[in-house]
Length: 387
Picture 1 (cartoon, helix red, strand yellow):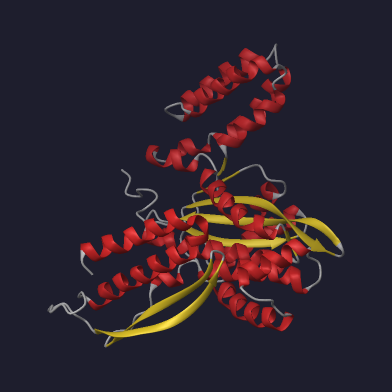
Picture 2 (spheres, helix red, strand yellow; picture 1 turned 90 degrees about the horizontal axis):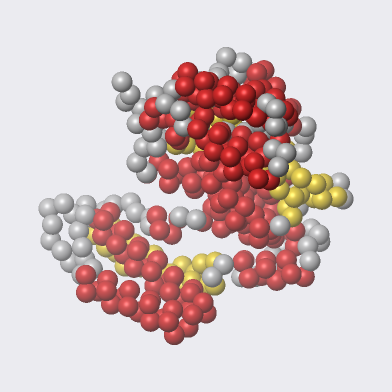
């Protein structure tokens, strides 16, 4: 495809959106996906259409129509076919698992009779048809098998481990309750981020955390040099039981948030936040401890509860000083997992209340499996070649 052809197709998309607005979104996406698949095929073949090239690995072999229902509407796609080389467009595969999982989560509420008219309307919009319980069961079985394989894949050496939890509403025993969704991110010896695992449970916090951490170890997780997390209920005890020798870094961002609860006057909050930043931004552990002692003494009279809390809690946020300087910024907070939680929340807002734990686990797993695939294609998160 020439640059003029690409420019022409892009202009068509822009004009379509300008004329039709969001009503033209499905057709615009259809054009873009079809063009992206043509470009992917040319790359897979090693040659443009009708091009003579010694690098050519195969030949174009027409197109196969495929109708795809999406949140934007129905897409009529033309899947490029090849001869002499195996090919399936990644632009079509991207997002398919999480799209299917989102449809199933909402569809389950519909067929189980626990949803509102609004949810039924959303289901029809997402799936493009009224769904039956047997259709949901068949689709769920296929998707669950794929996602279970991903969740149970073998792990290996992982120097850095980041943990976090969020909560979603699920129906259980005729009531709506909070289910904990636990996440684990690792940084490999090559400096790449990887999603190690996800778990959903209604069980007591310590039991859930302990089972989750043990499952990571059972899958081969080893070589952990530091764990970063917030001070989640039950995590401390579970971590000591399963990974007792691994140093723990308490998230500095959450420590600063926690401190505000112990500040007696609103007018003091900005100053206290600045004091903590000076401690966390110190060049080394010795200087951080010196500054912390100074800050504690500074507030001991005016805010004794704050001073006591700082003395007990802030040292838990200084473990990161044992790491190479270039690793500290990425690992001193849990921000990497927080951004992942935001992406999960964006997708779960559609379902609002999940019919069961399995439905929540399915959607979260599908989202995270896609994110993990993307991370493997990105540049390394940390430079592990330290002096």
